[in-house]
Amino acid sequence: MARTTALQSPRICRRRWLAAILLLVALAIGGAGAAVAAAAPLGSAAPAGSSVARGWQKVSMPAVGSYFELYVPSAWDGTTALPLVVFLHGAGGTPEEYFSNLAPAAEGARCVVAAPKASSDNGWGLGNDDQIIAATSVTVASMVPVDPARISIAGHSAGGAEAYLVAYGTVSHYSAVFTLSAPFYPVSSVADPAYKAPIHMYYGTTDPNYATYGAYAALQQQWNALGVTWESDIETGWGHDFWPPLSMLLGFQFLVGKSYVSCTGDATHACLQQGRYRIALTWQDASGRTGVGSPVPAAVSPDSAVLWFFDPTNWEMLVKVLDGCGLNQRVWVFAAATTNVAYTLTVTDTITGKLKTYQNPAGQAAAAVTDTDAFATCP
Image (cartoon, rainbow, N blue to C red):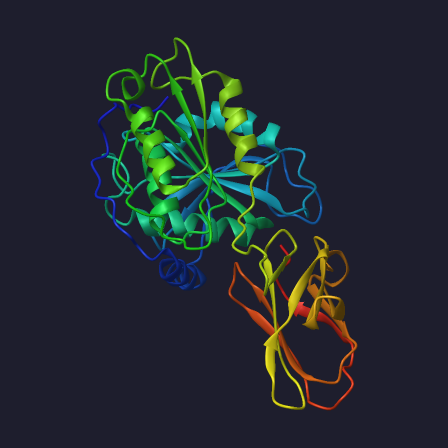
């Protein structure tokens, strides 16, 4: 287990714009490439149609001067997009020290795990650790189909602190956080205006961070003040570096059960496909009056919404965002309106920022929209 203490990983909590880093890292990886280590990976060979082995394998990231250990569950079918957990080791430790804890949890939660190596043995937040963490997610997604709405971050001790500092101090799009024996560091605000990732915290009652330094109590107060949803797993008699196997599994199940949702419906927007796609509509009638389309609350489902323009009892448009990944690797947009006023329908992927716009000219009966090539966001 990782060689950590309760007061390791001195770190300054700072806001870093991870989105820009991700772009730079993606470009760097595209040029330098990521290489699976030459040594034979632990685990069985992948089935036909997949080049990624099951079990553990070491993946080099020359662009950032580090590597990560990748675990792919044995039951993966080679095509289904899986949740990804990025796991950060404790200060003084290595990813390899966590193999026996991470593998059973990954199997039980049916997720991929990527455990990067920090740039320094003194903890996280030093050197180019931001780039290492960002590059890990980008590289995994280039190797294995990953569900982009279920990329979460976890860590032990100093790695746990780094996990929540990254998740809340940057616009990182992590869906959830899981910490084990983490020390306390202040977080003054949540950087992502659209989403506050929920956090699951584990502590043993003999861990100094729990029993002596009061990290658990301080973090509870911090999350409450920030409006972050939290839950905890407190195990009697356990210390800083060890925990019951069930605790790791519960933490992973918590992570994979959460999705990044940056869109919530309101009087002028509908949010479809688990909140990923935002629907907005503006209109202008023949007399020059303008307005917005409003969702009919009783007529909004996970993949479709009905909107009205002039009167809540006079419904004008049906919009559907459909998962067509199994047919053509695209998310589709369909719409039908019973109107001849000018309108602009905008559908936004809130994770990638990509949007599609559909317009109807004034005085023309609206034609049906059947865009089966709308979003190339399938894993």
